[in-house]
Each structure stands twice: as structure tokens, then as C-alpha cells.
Amino acid sequence: MLKLTAVPNRELDLEHVWHQNVQHRGLESRPPLEIESAEGCYIQDAEGRRYLDAMAGLFCVNVGYGRREIAEAVAEQMTRLPYYPLTQSHGPGARLAARLAEMMPKGLSRAYFLNSGSEAVETALKMARQYGRQRHAGQNRYKIIARHRGYHGFTMGALSATGQILRKQAVEPLVPGFFHVPPPDPYRCGFCRREGACSLACAEEIDRVIRMEGPETVAAVIAEPVIGGGGIFPAPEGYLERLREICDRHGALLILDEVITGFGRTGRLFGFEHSAACPDILTLAKGITSAYLPLAAVVATERVFQGFHGDPDSEVKFTQVSTFGGHPASCAAALANLDILTRERLWENSARMGDYLLERLRALDSPRIGEVRGRGLLIGLEIVSDRHDRSPLPEAQMVRLQLAIRDAGVIVGRNNDTVPGYCNVLILSPPLILSREEADTIVSAIVAGLEALGGGETGLQ
Ligand SMILES: Cc1ncc(COP(=O)(O)O)c(C=O)c1O
Image (tube, rainbow, N blue to C red; front, top):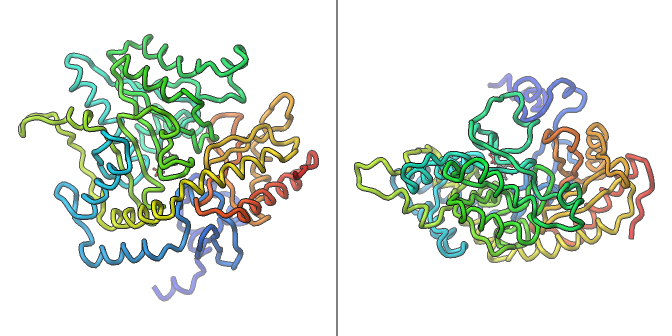
């Protein structure tokens, strides 16, 4: 122990930590940032350098860093009751489930708690399969329709729903029964180009696949209201409503994955609130605690929940157990976090600052920016080699760009390891407390990064 304390963290890390999605060869010359502390929108590394965290960690620190009231709520809960499983009941779990129901449209009233977004998606998929079979006697409803470029998690089911081959190919084959259709992507959409404007043909593709596969075999359609890590693709107007109609027509459930878009990220409390559509099952994580502790939830409608009601000895209940799902300390963190989110109405700042950032970024005159798109504080910049033929900037240059922006003091994301040839989207997802000055800092760092990359001046307006 004494021996270990004398060794710098960095050496211990390089010797013993297996990092997420990182090629370790070469880390000696470019080690990961060792983040030591954080406050507001800023993080600070072990060498005292400050960065504006325009990714809110991994799309999750919605209320910003350094909120003592969350830490205090957790400490109080851990002293009173550090753990009990939700096979029984505890106050923070009950209060959080009720709080979520209160925030949702009527009907979305049952919460099942887990630890991560992947687990929430995994659970939603299992619920949909079991529900389909129990609700439609004699049918084997197991197929799931998802979209290319969407991300739903790293576990086998959630990864099967994910439409990013670079995240999947090393571990295939995955779970059978998953089908993918094109996402809404007006910048590169083959359908729209033919028709001159968005006709929601990509949504109709879901209807076509369900009919071809046989509706009596389809359990659910899963979609993110805005594809996040896959490259920021907001659902266009009318898209989610069309998905709702298609699901209703074929007796399939609509699962909306709001692991990123939930809790104010898109400028409304939930991403689906930009539409008139309401899901049957909603998956939530990240912003539910602003990542102060791990927690996720599947929220189902009362109708779906009733599909699992039966006699005590019948087999229709949902049999899954999660040891840590709904941990009382995590639920206490979530309750304190949601108090802050609603007291400060942070979705409104997300809408305001999102519009401001979109406006400023769209005004940049750079030969490298093909498109700027987003909703609220979830924004993507499609970076291209050539604006006319829209060819994506090669990944090696995207890495250089991202590092140059970091050198200018701002952490931005990138849709790395998603689909071949199109890992060219810079991603912004800052804390929802972002100020105008901080938004300007992000824009200036992006301009500095583009200038460092070369290939043409970036005009600032
Ligand atoms: C839309 C979506 N679903 C699911 C997940 C998986 O969440 P987690 O990393 O907490 O397992 C993510 C993660 O980024 C996500 O963006």
C-alpha cells in the first residue's frame, strides 16, 4: 500500500487500467487526461489545466459539476440506508418513480430501475418481446426494427439494436431478429435528394420492413429522438408521429431511447416532446442523476405494465432482477438532481443556448463545415474535405481537429468508431447551465481548431 502511494497515478493507470474504446499502444506518448476536479462547465486536470467540457462528460452532467446539494442528499441517504434491493421497496425508489411519472405525459407511469443506459435498453427490448408474446396469443413477436447510425449500448441486445457496424463487427454474431433502416439524414439522404424535400420516406421504410417481415413477428421499433453519439440526427417534423402510426397499425411497441435526449438536453424535458407522439416504453439514464451516481430507468405505460399482470403463480411477470438497479443513493442523487433541473428550468437555457450556438456556428464561413445541425444543446458539425461533393474529412484529420480544439481549451466529442467513412461529425453536448460567454468560448476554440487544421480560412461573423 505504502509502495503504491508513492507511484504517480499516471504510471499506475498506464500499467493497470484498461481504458474504454482506446488503443493502448501509443498511450505513453499521448496519455489520457487525468481529470482531478470540476466546477460548473469546467474540468481541471492533474497539471492544473482547465478545459470547458463541451461534452458534459459523456452527454450526461446536465446540471453541471460541483452541485453540493446532490452530494449532501447522497451522503444523507447512505447514512440512513446504504442499500436494499427493489425486490422490496425503499423511499427514494418510490419517490423517484412517482416523480418521473409526474414529469411524463399521462400513461407513462411505471419505472423499472437499472444502472446504465445499456441495461435500460436491454430491459426495454426484453419487455417488448415478452409483452408481444403475452399480448398477442399465438404470435411470436420478437423482431426489433432500429436505424443505421443509432446507438443503444454495449450489451449484446442493445448492441444488436445499434446501427454502427464498427462497434459490432469484432464480436458478431449478435442477437438474432434485429433489422436496420436508414436514419433521417437530410444532408446525405438518398430519398430526399430524389424528391427535392423531406417526404419522411425513411420512416415509411420502417413500415415496409415490418410488412416484409410479417407484422405478427415484430415486437418493437426503437429510436432515439435525436441520434446522439452516431452523429446528431434530429428526427424531422412529423417523423416520430409517423413511427407512432406505423407501430399502432402493426401492433408493435414504440421504444424511444432518451438516454441522451432526456432531462432537458434537447431544449424540452424529453426529446419526444418536440412531437405529438408518445412512446410505449422510454429508456432513460445519464441526465437522470447528471451522472453524479449511476442510474437508469425504463418507463413504461400503464397499458404495457398491465400486460405483465396475472395470478401469483402465472408466468407473465417480468422475471429480471438487478442487484444494484434503483440503488437508494442513486435514487437520492436523482431526486436532488431533478430538483435542480426543474427549479432552474434548465431545459429553457438548453433551448436558448442551443439556438445561439447553432446560429453562431452556422454563421462560420469555413470550407470544412458541411452542415451544422442539432436540437437544444445537442449539436453536430459535419466536417468535410470538400463542401461541394460533401466528402467526409478522413478520421486521422478529425482526430487532429479534435485535439487542436482541446489545445484551445475546449473538450468536444466526435462520432468515432461508428460507420465506415462517416466518422466525421464533431459533437457538442455541454452542461445545460452553459452561459453565452461559454458558448462563445466553444465557438472560438472550434475556429482555432479549424485554422490549425488548415485548408482555408474560417470567417467569423
Ligand atoms: C442513446 C443511447 N442509448 C444507450 C446508451 C448506453 O448507455 P450506457 O453507456 O450508460 O450504457 C447510450 C450511451 O451513450 C446512448 O447514447
